[in-house]
Image (tube, rainbow, N blue to C red; front, side, top):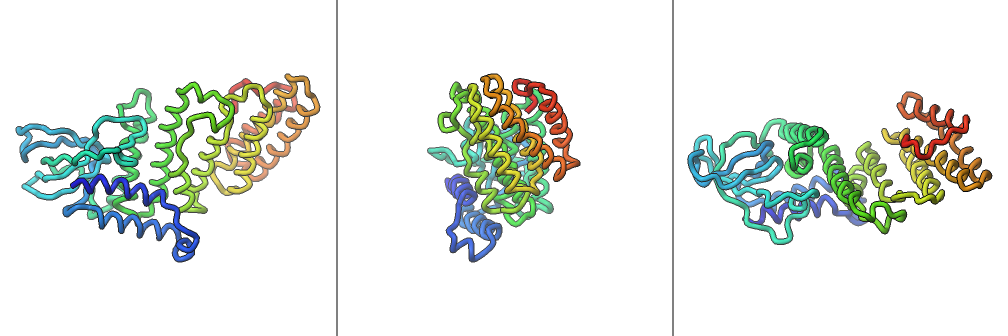
Length: 349
C-alpha cells in the first residue's frame, strides 16, 4: 500500500514535467498533460477506489464509533476504499504526520514515506471519480478552505488543505475544465506560503534576488507551459516577476528602474492579462520613485528623465485600460509627479 504515497511523487512529477519539442508537436500540451496524469493514476493506484475527504474524518480500528480511534484524515487527503460494511468503509488513508508551512508531504511526498494507515470510517463527505460534479465539489471545498485561510487567525492548516483539494481536482478529474484554475490556485498557495516564510529571514532585505530565499518557480512554469494563452498562465507570469525584484532598494535607483522594466515588459507580452493594468501602474510608480531618489541624490537630470517616463506609461494605461481601478490610481500618481509631490516612501505602490 506504499504505492499511494508513490502516487503523490509521480503525480507532482507529472505536473512539473516539461516535454521535448517533438512531444509538444504531437499533441496540445493540455491533452498531453491529461493523458500523463491518467496513465500515472491508473498504474499507481492500488486495488480499490481512490477517494478524497472534503472534511476531517475520524478513522477507527473497527467499523464502530465505540472502537479505538486511530487518527483523523484531513481535508484533501487521499485514501483507497477497499471494503464496505453498511455505512462504514475500510480504507488505506494518507494521513498527516505533522504540518509544515509548505506542506511538503502533499507536494513531494516525505523523504521516507510512512505506511498508509488502515482503518474504518463512516462513508460521508468523500469524493471519488464517480461522484456527480465531483470536480466542482472538490474545487468548491478548496475555495472555502482558501477563503478561511485569508481571515484573521485562521485555523491551522487551512491554506494547506485548500492546496491539497485543488491538487485532487487535477489528480482525480484531469479532464475537468477546472484543472487550469485548480493548478493555478495550488501553485499560488504554495508560492504565498513559501514567500511568507522567506520574508521572515534576514536575507529578505538583501538587494539582489540571488542572495535571498525565493519561492520555487516550477509549478508556476507548469501552469504557463500546459495552459498557455490563458489568464491562469498570465497570472503565473505576473507572479514570477516577484523573484526578479530587489529586496530593499538600499538607495540604489537602478532597483526601481529595473523593476519598472520588468513590469513594462510584462504588459507588452501579456496585454490581455487581468494583471496588465497593475503592471503598468507599478512601472509608473517605480519610475516616479526613481526620480525622487535621483532628486535626493542631487541628480536633477536623471530625476527629470525618470519622472518624464511616468506620463507616457500613465497615458498608455488610461488609453488601453480606462475602466481599470489602476487608471484612476495612475491619474493621481501623475498629478503628484506634475505637482512635485514626492511619492517614494508614501507606501502607495
